[in-house]
Length: 81
Image (cartoon, rainbow, N blue to C red; front, side, top):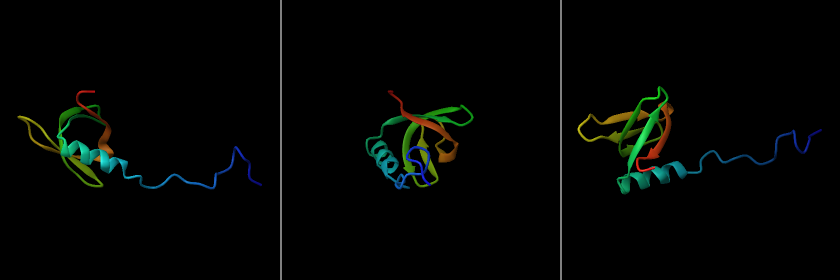
């Protein structure tokens, strides 16, 4: 017997909305500076140059560029935010 409030609904959230890819693509095309907070609370700033399913590449001024695994990212915000 399924409950209206306690059971599983017949609909599921989609696996992929592609919103992340759209957002990262916009950041790359417009070269919007971002601030990335890592899971260890370290913070890096730069411009997203590339992304795939597992990581992003951040280009930084005067510092080495970084490949950051997405699972190590706590959050990413536009640097002006």
